[in-house]
Length: 188
Ligand code: 5GP
Ligand code: MG
Image (cartoon, rainbow, N blue to C red; front, top):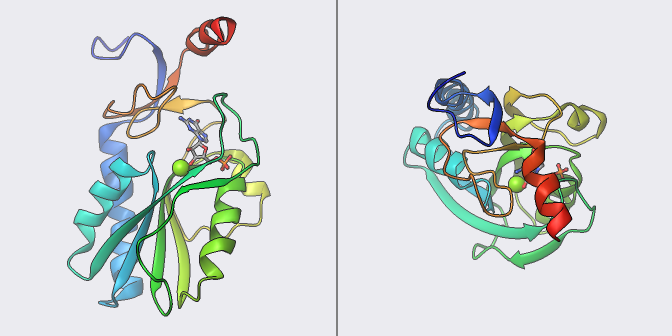
């Protein structure tokens, strides 16, 4: 057992090195594909904050960023399918090349809703980059151009991902000990 591991984490699915390597690979592809075209990165708050920070710095100067906050999860650990905009973009998307920056894709419900929403605003193109993808995402028909790391179907936290607003600042992505959420469920 790694002595540095947070006591609520039972397994690490992406180390700091894995994350850096994945973002390096994605950024190289993005730089090649867009080749100097002005790009608007759209991050989904709050989970994508770390991915946005580390990916955007690898992409160079023809890059802007904007943020949306949507709610899809309630307080549990599974998608509800209900998506609500809590904070909208400041940027007009007409004619823009948009790259949605995501932390994780699980059911893909949030993302397919988001893509439909962004495409309806007249963007020139809308693509998706995600650091993490779970197996369920393979079943949905959302086209995700850039994928960092495929992870098992476990509830994970760290590197932006939270449980009840905790664990976002862990530098790695790990599986949360199930007792952490079953304990709080009995309190709720
Ligand atoms: P989806 O709609 O694809 O099922 O889930 C989308 C959102 O749910 C993600 O952007 C993320 O906010 C949250 N999510 C999905 N899986 C996990 C997970 O394993 N851990 C955490 N902390 N959030 C998750
Ligand atoms: Mg997200």
